[in-house]
Image (cartoon, rainbow, N blue to C red; front, side):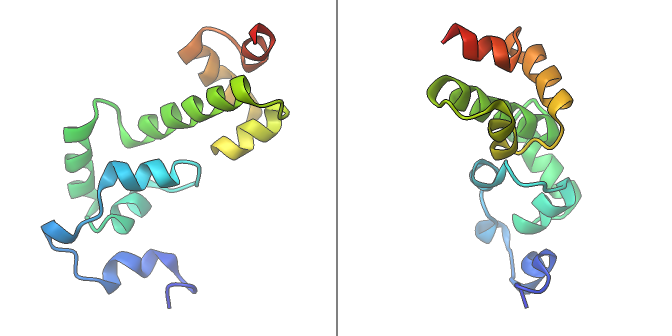
Length: 120
């Protein structure tokens, strides 16, 4: 059943407080996938409202901004440690749009991915 529709995951199991998946651990393992807040809530055994409330206790960022920040961190590490093309790094990190990737990367790090690559 899970192979047919992964969104049923949370509803198949009884997630009491002590059985909920750790939010940050789950997000660290899955930041590169295109998951909505609703998906994150379902997969961690919470309602959307409970997920948002629990997440706000863990981070000052919204779940979406946390994911973007985590993807940028992964992209920067790959830019500095590999010779992969920037488009491949962008995709492996979970970004779908090159111009968005370059814009948010520059906002966070003050330089473009190409400039980061040239420095090293």
